[in-house]
Length: 268
Image (cartoon, rainbow, N blue to C red; front, side, top):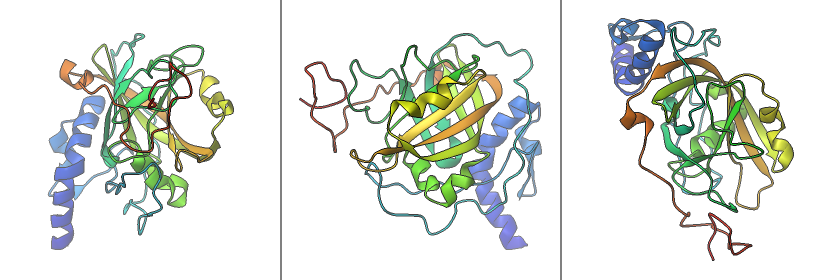
């Protein structure tokens, strides 16, 4: 028991403190009340611990984790409404984080005539309209490479039991009006064909919903994976948190040559 308490106290410092702070704001509970004597508590069915996934500097490496990253059974999905008094306007997404996986990326518009996504950022999809407005009755669709420091942990987890350990994780999307939209992952969709039909589910959304996409292989791989998350609540964010400075860059490796003189994200 003493060894377990020591392990959970260490876990608290790495994972529970930031998640406790978020839940305290959403539920009106102070973070200190979310833990006691180093014991991990499940609050409103929202909390569990997941070790950060390992990452390789490739679009989709063959290495798989030795075991599922979730040592605890998952609680039921939360059934919470947005925070009282929260107002939602059409503010664009600026940052996405998944604390349990160590994902933290600026969100930017895709470059004009994009042929290959930028590195070190997530981008929002632009179809007939920009899909980048969390909180509105529609889907927000963000994508990034399956590379180190980007969305690789999503792919790593998807390769274990089709990503079952990600169900229930929190995703935070910051917006330009200094808001933090908290979502909870409800679905992982593997092996999505790289075609326009991949957007059908997101386009059909009639309520606030978050979709994340990354690659399942190299640049020639015909499949993508998607993660769907549902809203939990909306919190105020500081301007510094809501306005990261990173704007992305053309990837250093595995970058295709531009097919047109105006291509974006590719090399000439």
